[in-house]
Image (cartoon, rainbow, N blue to C red):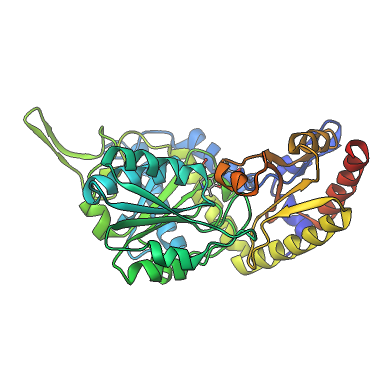
Amino acid sequence: MNLTNLRKDFPILNEKVNNKPLVYLDNAATTQKPLCVIEAMSNYYLHLNSNVHRGVHTLSQQATTEFEHVRKSVQTFLNSKEQEEIIFTRGTTESINLVASSFSEAFIKEGDEIIVSELEHHSNIVPWQIIAQRKKAILRVIPFNDNGELDLNVYKTLLNEKTKIVSVAHVSNALGTVNPIKEIITLAHNKNIPVLIDGAQGVPHYKIDVQDLDCDFYCFSGHKLYAPMGVGIVYGKRKFLEAMPPYHGGGEMIKEVRFSGTTFNEIPYKFEAGTPSVADVLGLKAAIDYVNSIGFETIQKHEDELMQYTTKKLLEVGDITIYGNAKQKAGSLSFNLNGVHPFDVGTLLDQLGIAIRTGHHCAQPVMQHYDIVGTARVSFAIYTTKEEIDYFIESLKRVKQILL
Ligand code: C6P
């Protein structure tokens, strides 16, 4: 992979921040967008803008065709059996809320159990807590060890005839842990329990094959995959989506509306009430094409090297604690300079042009596990270079001199 050429696809990487060249290491929060994605969106507004579905005029039909092409493209990207199993949302958060709300209406009753894990993002905890409260169901939690790996022995003991769904992250945003999702899914399926995978941090780094994984739901956000903000995906198996009631009511999701009663559209439209974010959806297709043109083997190799390189260099700085030492990690590396608040580290690095994320990363239970207020987190993308990591490490040494 020629990084110099590839970086030219991302104009924002030439920006200066605080009079220093931008070093963007906050990719787990959102990735930068290549020109082809920006152009796909502006092309829509320049030449194609009109509302999709039910339009007889040419622009609307063209926009609808392009929009539905993206569904096909996501189907191929995830290797789902049918394109009707692909639902457009605004992002992972909305995707998980959609499943939690709708699945629970169909399948969860008082006394039932829902399993999540201790390392989830709040988006994969709070929707289930709300459902548990609403349905008088019980939330069970798979713990993780100090390396940041889920305890599968405890998980096995949690699975029982009352368990109605398991919902876990593919990759932890706070620790970088890659969970053994295939094993987690198989163990649940042995007891006929469906599994939702929060793929927000999985999709940018791994080729996803939902048929091979056999997961029942897979959710992700476009904006962590070089696509625009405002578009996300729920993949769901047809048998569940058909049995689940609509999430939002409104236009598009209906067959007929009468005051005596309304009938609902087929999947996926049953779950897509209202005008979708068409430009963002078209941007998602451009991002998928872009990522495919690089290839996941190349992406993974590059990011694995960065993870190992950064981990080694960070430890050499001294007075550093790394949180999460799982055997398999991807994307994110969390650490603290011992005795220093992560905000101070982040603020000083920002003065040197380096963007990292600090805080609890919307994963407060992870912070509670380690009894810390938060971490500093660097996260990688396809355009991250070793030179950027070297600059980050040198800058961190300066920060250490100032603060310790
Ligand atoms: N994590 C991070 O900096 P949304 O905001 O809907 O696109 O994604 C929510 C979400 C769900 N699950 C996981 C594992 C995630 O990492 C995220 C988003 C960002 O880590 C923002 S807090």
